[in-house]
Length: 140
Length: 140
DNA sequence: CGTCTAATTGAAATACTGTTGCAATTAGAT
DNA sequence: ATCTAATTGCAACAGTATTTCAATTAGACG
Ligand SMILES: [Mn+2]
Ligand SMILES: [Mn+2]
Ligand SMILES: [Zn+2]
Ligand SMILES: [Zn+2]
Image (cartoon, rainbow over all chains, first blue to last red; front, side, top):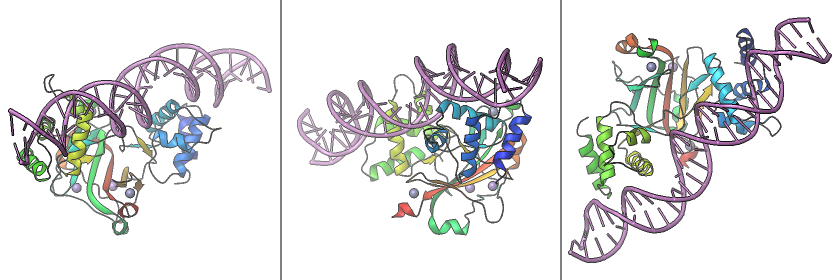
């Protein structure tokens, strides 16, 4: 995943969006990162000279998501609480349009799978499986 | 999952916590719900008479999480952004103690599985698989 | 190149979410 | 019924997210 910035710029151009400094800066940071970044994560990574207004970062990311340049992965903020399941896992369907979240049961049991290299360093207490997309209603 | 409230109250008692109105109210609401609830979701579900201070709801939930009466499922808040993967899926390990989030590759490909009854009503654009627990560092 | 303008950014105001400290209230032990 | 530690509510605050509008700028065009 190295051509990321280059390719993203192409897609911006193709869709008639300007190649601005804030957009380039954010793309560079995302390319370097190995973990998901929040708007404020990004802000903190910028030097004083290249500082950006948080509002700008939000808008840049919003655009990137619209163009599918980045995925919006739901992490952070607070907590929704749920009754624990037998196997300690949760399965959700989330509509990207209306935000509706529904919990569901997997039809042939839990598909949990922990890579062995992770298992060494990490004590698992629960896991979550989330499917994002568009619900029936929002398809009109 | 019907004995939920009763069992929760038992565990509160066993651990020397008081059975208060706010705690009972929140337990009832969670039992009724079929989807995860945020503190403010819960607040909105309460009538004027039984109204609770949001701070109280936060603290009640915090206790419930500690006693494993509910799971803290990470949804909502804003966005962390990530470069999309081939298969449109993301796999994270999240430490419940320090909050560190790492993305990882599944060792034998993507374990994505969409129950057929969901597939009918829902157009999937991406999915996320998240493992929560305690990282090496935080185990001391 | 410079000019021009629609697109983009930043500043300010505001709303929502989450946390902390302290005083008032209350569950439940005696 | 009384007493007290545990719990709740209030107030103040910090962090996150959104909206409006004025200032700036990318890049199209001459
Ligand atoms: Mn599972
Ligand atoms: Mn996957
Ligand atoms: Zn929807
Ligand atoms: Zn940790």
